[in-house]
Length: 225
Length: 243
Image: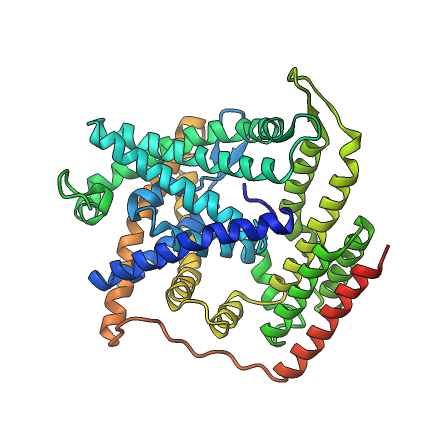
């Protein structure tokens, strides 16, 4: 769930945009460097952005009986790296605002921070840690995708709680409220997304092993960037 | 896609995106500048009226495009109307009502400004506007590719899901999960296949980097942008002066 247009006070909207800006610059620099080495990746990132946009239209069944859509944060971070996900995420979020009125222009910075910066960084960090500890690939992928998804929604709750502290209990009570509401849908969704990502990576390792070897996180142990 | 349909089928289709962007910017500033909920609601109603009466966007379509955001607003508004005490018991907090009212009205006005822009302007026009605003070339390339490919992926997704449904692929929760996994994995494989195809096609045409496209020309762009700037300033003044 993205924060809607106009929902955040102006100083928060500006603040999150400023906080996201250096990551966008870093992401663009990283992608430019990647494209200099492998020009064919230009098409790959554009196509991946379209794929993420379409993936968010999929309805996942969740344990509470409701349906929700996957974020693709974990899968994207695993396939293209967390820094490349920043420009890709920016394009996807902008398209969601402009084509679906989902999210918004004034809240783009805040949504970018949670969906395209925190989520992918957590997912990629956990994946790397799991692989270093020698855990099985499926367990690493599941943890990265599901906890990356949860980190995204925890950040959104944090952003909302910071902007709108509870009149009685302040920031902590507000975080509990927003976090509690998101948890009802997001915890089952995170589990579903983790399972789905494991299935996708299984299919990729079976049918696209060569391409996976060129991706930074799936490089053979010892050759990682 | 609902918004895309309206963007290509409204009366302002040939109006310069710079003019529509200027009006939307004025609307966003007015939404944040409005001192009271009534003033923000006035901005929302005026912007919705301009989109429906001026650009002839069907009101039903406008409502359907706004519905998901209004759902988010209702849920968040209700959350803010609940207070949690130190002993973790919750209660209704009527004292939060003024804040919720002004937040809801501001969000509705900002949403109306966004919808006014996106329901009247197709995405390629907005991308060309971003190009004129000197957005980084790499991001523009990603947008052009993403826009072109998302319809291809949508069609592939629909076709695959239809084929799975015809074979009872979604008959139970377990089968649904399996089918979705296969569907997502298949689409993920297509990311590489389609990207390789595009790269090969670009190389065959001596493509060596940025994707350059012709920018659409709009008649009376300067005049329309001046009108939009005037309307935007008027909207901001109205928001500031309305009680």
